[in-house]
Image 1 (tube, helix red, strand yellow):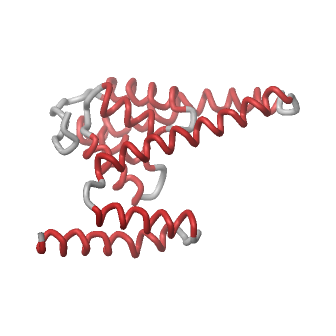
Image 2: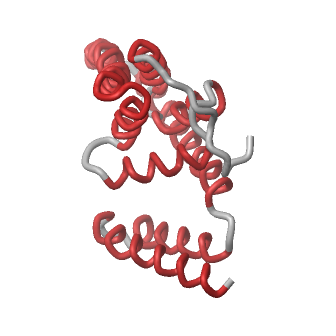
Length: 187
């Protein structure tokens, strides 16, 4: 599927949205973005890569978790308020129940070296998943040199210079829009 082409228009029911997002939430284990992208773009083909990246970016700008915002947006787009409520509920409620059960179990066995080692291994795997998803999103959305430069500058500002994300976004968003518009007029 072309990264720029929108996904096929599909009208989803609240039950379909709840079920799909419950599966995403229950299989993500802290990595909603990679799992959500795989399910929504590759498996179900409800969104293209570009649509996923756009909805994720909008979700990032809004208050609250970005994947919850994305689920609400996709749910609303398909089935109105009922779809938004179903998608968010599916994403949040089943995993919350599982997380409470796991947290209680881990607390009980937190002194065990095997549990501590397993948690360290899961942290390394989570870092790998985040990096792989970031590279997939970058590959399909950053296509020109100025996009790469802007992405690296934003990364440096947040990760290396440790500037507050809100400040970086307030500066980077209008700057990137200006650069994109200026280069579009030139090229």
